[in-house]
Length: 201
Image (cartoon, rainbow, N blue to C red):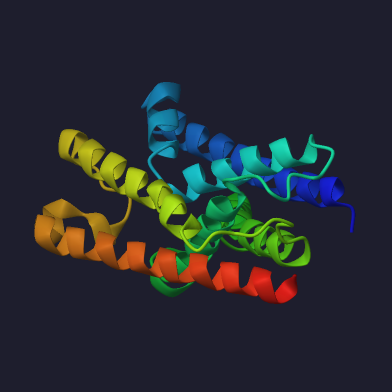
């Protein structure tokens, strides 16, 4: 498969999912009388949205490169993070609510279609260069930055986007334990992707 075409497909899916969710978030906020700025603020609260945005940007950059961006430094981070999004949603959050109509479609795209497409992109077209054993530690910066962002934002506004990081309910100690747990899962996924890349190569 052509590497640039594959990257373009992943980018198109991610951008479509993001734009659909943005439209729904803004519409909900406006319908509730909170306005566009509040809708955008809430939209940008979620690891799902920000990680799909990372995938969209990474795949877009890859699609514009002659080599298809197979060796982009943050490609592995984006793929690992969005796979974590899909697994986290499937095992922890899919029973929390039952979206309908366009919201169901947005959920499926953000949590299943884009993660699977990104994973296929990584496995079918793995990096051509050696992925260092320390690379997953660099990629870990993404979820760590999000955890800091979500907790600081929550401390200021009182809103926590996910129940497992809700300091107001769990307390800071349990919340930090959950963050560490997700960080370890992220590292395990990242190293697994690295191993699969070596086997594929």
